[in-house]
Amino acid sequence: MNRYSHMRTNLLTFFVFLLSAVFFNAVASDCEPPREKFVVVLDAGHGGQDPGNRGNGFFEKDIALNIVLSIGAELEKLPDVKVIYTRKTDVFVTLAGRAEIANDAGADLFISVHCNAHRSQAAGTETFVLGLHRNEDNLKVAMNENSVIFLEEDYEVTYDGFNPNSPESYIGLTLMQEEYLDQSILLADLIQKNFTHKLNRVDRGVKQAGFLVLRQTYMPSVLIETGFLTNNSEGSFLNSRNGQGKMSEAIVDAVKDYKNRINLEILEGLAEDPPVQVNTKSAEVASDEYRDVTFPVQLAATGKKIDPSPRNFKGLDGIFRNKEGKLYKYYYGATSSYVQIKELQEIARKKGYNSCFIVAFRNNDKISVNDALKTKMN
Image 1 (tube, rainbow, N blue to C red):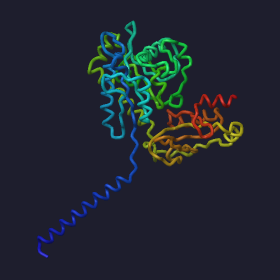
Image 2 (image 1 turned 180 degrees about the vertical axis):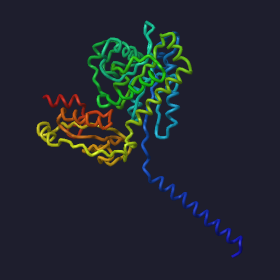
Image 3 (image 1 turned 30 degrees about the vertical axis):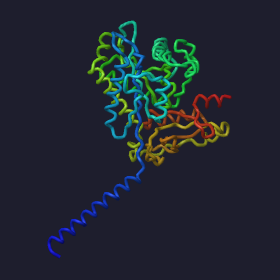
Image 4 (image 1 turned 90 degrees about the vertical axis):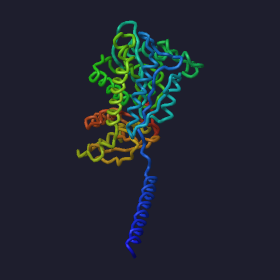
């Protein structure tokens, strides 16, 4: 064989090897299960024929949309995050429609962005989670944001006769987000701390109020009032590109921090503590009395399937997982005693699961903790 024939043979062998490698890599890639992305639904308040508040002549709907688009642009740079918008242009979307978008997407977070207004020069940021209003100011904020339903056809039917201007309507507001409340508060707290410590905004705190857009979502959800357009200084700040950029950056950082805190992937192989013993005897006694109601502590939820052994959960024993939708949810303990599950929750928090919360099951079906407690009292 001459030198040129030898070179041709080597080149042919090389290309066959290269094509084989590409083929087998493609096959291997196809065989790997796709990784679930962390889904964030961003909701710019108001829009279209609903301008929101017009403090100092500004348009709340435009400012909220600019902040949301800026948040989304940054989150979309993360390979494991998927961003969905309730609106990306100046269009009107019903409150029920916004919640439906989030629910259909199976979102991990729902974030609604707004701007506040007041007859005085009030200033500052506040972040709301769903709940009954604690004072008249919270009620008024909820009333203002909920009044948009008057622009919708058949709003009485859509919202079961809810009247945004009637305080009595809020008394009957049920906490449909109960199982997500702790996580919602965690995100709200992270957002407020960034506004306060990074941007030096006035901190009006994390609050509860009856917002319809939060009432109908089934994931951790917050509504952010980024400041008061009616305040001369704050209104100008929020209407500026610089102000909108800073507010969106603070929210993005909070989302990243929240995501890292609940992401179980960072916990694998890190726990070396000895297992915590669960008092199963008392749980068995309680279960004799209330066989159909069980309380576990939910530690976290992720798209990744993880072995529920103590080494993966900071030494906690008695971990079990359950797949709900696209997520694996990881629970600690299982007892019919609410007193005992509160003790187990405290143990989990001391181990570092600060955002863990109690859930309830009746005959393997998830129910609200309130319903479970009512069952136990009957």
